[in-house]
Amino acid sequence: MGDLLGVTVSPVQPYAARKDYICPGCEMTIPPGTFHVVVVPDEEPDLRRHWHHGCWHKEMRRRFGSRTPRP
Ligand SMILES: [Zn+2]
Image (cartoon, rainbow, N blue to C red; front, side, top):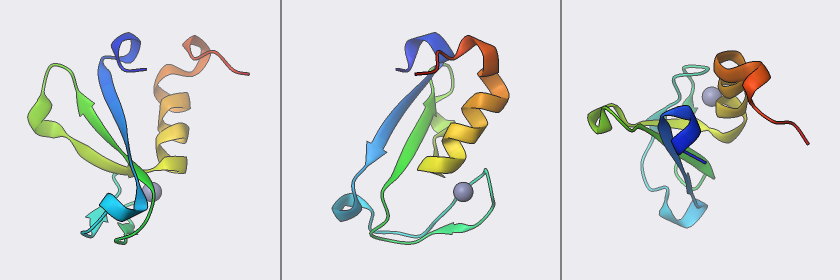
């Protein structure tokens, strides 16, 4: 999933989500125990961010819109 977009996206299962994170998409908290995704830019691994799953999907559409295949 990552190579085309220049980012690597990894799912974080609820049992592995143990901290609060701020989602850069909506600037709301991702509470512990919430399924979400970690997005790591391939070029800048230090800039990894935690996103709500839905917010990342919206962001992908915003960034990559027509290039992202839709079902
Ligand atoms: Zn969000």
